[in-house]
Length: 136
Length: 414
Image (cartoon, one colour):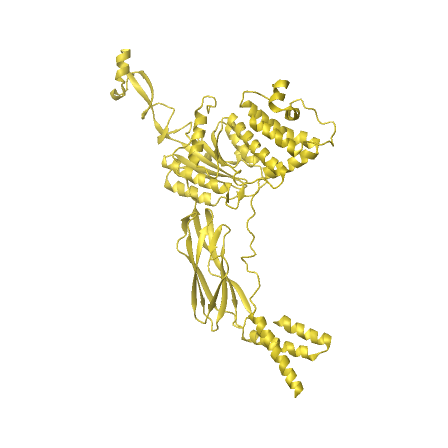
């Protein structure tokens, strides 16, 4: 008799658990929530320049080979608007206009760096150069 | 349910206690009853749109109805499939309880976030039997297409072409003939009309003088849409703005009786030969709706464009963010071949913010100056560049281009 009562209690407890489980909300993720939002498109030009600024800060070769032509092009276009050319500027006038650091980097007769593993142009220094270019 | 029953049985076997097996018995009974009573639901569903054409920014109502043709009550969760740039409100899954033979209608507000060919449907339906033991998932209904047309800017000022066609239009031609715009005074010749005589000049010079005038002609205009690359943020991208500009320019030039063509120049190449009229406007807009950024390594140049698409003397309006080397090479190549060319630069700077680090901020500044240098290089070749930002209107930018083209220093020699 007692055994039957115990069995009955266990079965009732099982039914209670089954009812509780069936009442739980369906936690399965929906198709829509799995959809990812489109990622913003960042231009390759800008990504390449972000890499260049970092690499030119640590490598004199990168600064000479990749950053220098870019700055020379910007300086040339800005000087052309003033009726001047980078190639024909006297050294003293160019230093006054562009500053020593920028002129040393963009002057046409700049030699290839002797120390290939030397530091390049730090981002802070580059920021100052860009400020000078913008004021041209 | 079956997992709980199995867990109870395994636990009973492992521990040697039969009570645990008894505990799992109700689960087995419940799951068995559910499986025996389970039937595939007989559902029918459809999606309807109150209209299929609208302007971007407008809202269309998508009505979904679903009907339970079965004999049992079904709990249904439904969500319409939608294209990427279409927002639906309510956004989540909608749950409907359908008794046998009942029908339910749900209205979704569909809002295209940009122009384009969008799609709504079919419905993803997830149904459960009343016991919740079995579920059924499927797709019902059709896929409906929705075309959202770009919002165009009304343009009063357009780029004046250097060369015109000898057909009636609104552009003052360089040639002399019958027209309204005064050109010059010259001595009377046999065949001149009396009404052309300038009586004041005749009285001063003592010989008959006649007025010469510039005729009003139309021109060929080719819109060159650069779809190589775009800059995009959450609010939109450069291609969105470029298509709006192209649609506005096409409408304005066609209204002035110009022949307008379109070249979609990017990873894929599409074109429409220049033509006149309202039909051509709708052809162009349809082509614009299909334009998208297609990634490609293929190097394309002006030789890829059929000759008949670029008539001699046509004004080419290149709408580009100038982000890809191939599009820059194309415009310089066109100019070097003597093409009358203007670049409408859809500025990507409004869509892209500097990166988080100090070096990224320097790179962003360098990028801005590099773009200015590129613009100066194009202008030095005689290419007018109109910079169009996100918040600006296109009209003033085109006025600036016309001023550039008129200036003696940068006179366009075609």
